[in-house]
Every structure is written in C-alpha cells, then in structure tokens.
Length: 157
Image (cartoon, rainbow, N blue to C red; front, side, top):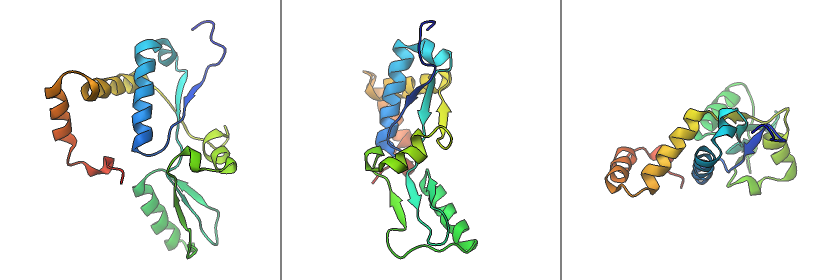
C-alpha cells in the first residue's frame, strides 16, 4: 500500500439491482484479496442516478430511488414546477445509456458527483452475502431467500 500511486479507487456500476450485484462482487474481491485498500480508506463507490426528472420551468433533477422520484415529483409540483407531456422522466438502464454530459455531471465531475467511501464493515457484509448466495451451504442460502423473498423492493422489473 505504501507504493500506491492513487489514493482513490472508485467503483462504478449501474444504479439498478444488476449494478448492486456487480458492486457486491467487486467489494468481495477487494475484501478478500486487497483488504489494505479498504483499511486505508482508498475505495469509493460512485452513486449514479436511477432517474432524471425533466421540468419544463426548472432545471432537471437527478434522483437515486423510486421513493426519491415520487417525493421529488410531489414536492416539485407542489412548488409550481411543471412536467413536460413527453419524456419527462428518464429511467437509466445503465451507465452506458447516459451521454457524455450526463455521465460527467452525475458521476465523473468531482464537484457534483456523489461518492461513498467503503468501510471494512461494508466489504465484510458484501463478502457475507456473496458467501451465503454463492457458497456450498444450501441451508443458509435457502434461509436467506425465504427471509428476503417477500421484500419486493429489491425486485427490478
């Protein structure tokens, strides 16, 4: 770690559940094989938006969850903002769907992006979930699935 040239390793993945899966895999890799990067606070996760709300009489707005989208729409309309009839809400299917300016504004620009620093606890939790879902202990996997099957907020349709 003393010879490291860069002190920020930023993981970028889509904002949907597939991106969450990718982040879990990457965090597990770093936790198991490059733990000092996490211990020294060098690992970050970029937080790309899931939605872009286009207002006809106000600047556009990026939001990160379904709940945040609903709240932003309600608050915006209560404040007198108007939504165009077409293409008012864009759900990003992934980072590849964003154009250069959107990616820069939301995820790349140090002045406007949101980064979360990964802690050892974050990586340990990712490793635990990975081991439960991909390991050889069928009973643990079955229990995990049964405990979480009714929690449809993790379902991406």
